[in-house]
Length: 429
Image (cartoon, rainbow, N blue to C red):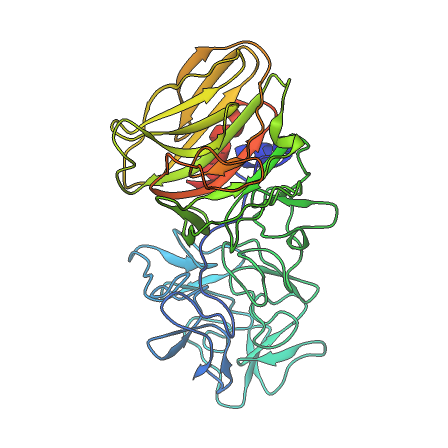
């Protein structure tokens, strides 16, 4: 998610804008945590359940204080469930009824007042029980709704956004929940495309004119050389085509979505390319989420990213120190004193601006050293999780295997600002 529109996207993050997150309760077919949607349970009027099925019961996880945002996620006694989140009070013109935030104008169980349920065969229209709905409204689960604007019945009964907004019969799903036919949490599918700074998996998830870079919608950063997010494969999502081969490494649960599980003789390799060389340049940045999970051989280093003879970063095995080596003088030496604890996720980053190298661990600057000169390159491939990759991307001579999981790797030909690094860490931690 960093773009010079990192400047676009990262400045948006610095302002707290964003919508990514884990899946919450969903509409028909998606369910919530601990249950699934569909017709395994029925709604109050006998229709298929559009909410989540929790303990065999059809539940509106957007308002249920016992299942707020997902099954078995109860709110504290003093709070209510508003739009799938526990809060001190209801918002959006809704009223609190036994801890649930409901719309008294349309809720068939709380029509005009809390606990005032409409009789069988009646609907709730404009806060009163009636035989039918007004023109332009549709009966859904006993409620008279406008399917162009109803987040629970967006476009049709049961096609709910659950926690999101409905605009023109389509979900505007920036709500940290995977709704309807979204291709990702908060973007894509039948949902309105996401704005800059919002989570995405592909360009189609974003509004027209925006790209999906490092998992967020924004303007493509021309300085982004490669972005490896490991969402189902080892491909480069920067658009520069630096796709990697897994070489036996596997995809497991990562820090954001999936990550790359690396161990001896298994790492991601990328063939050499002109934009990877960055020869003659005087700035670069590398960052990644890492979790060490074993001994990578005492006195050696578990490599996070390496272009042999040019630039690399890794974790010192015996001390768990985060270190780097950047070649701008004709020789390169490992440097760095930032501690990275084993068995837990840590965000690491290195920047070089032609005069100073800076190290970052979990959003904080931990080490600096002076270095001047232009970057030097050798004919070698790029390794994520190992070093010594041949120019053609083969791994035969590789070594210094990282032992653990690596995620969200990004390589830039410029020095990211402290604000950009901190914003990215805060957004994804």
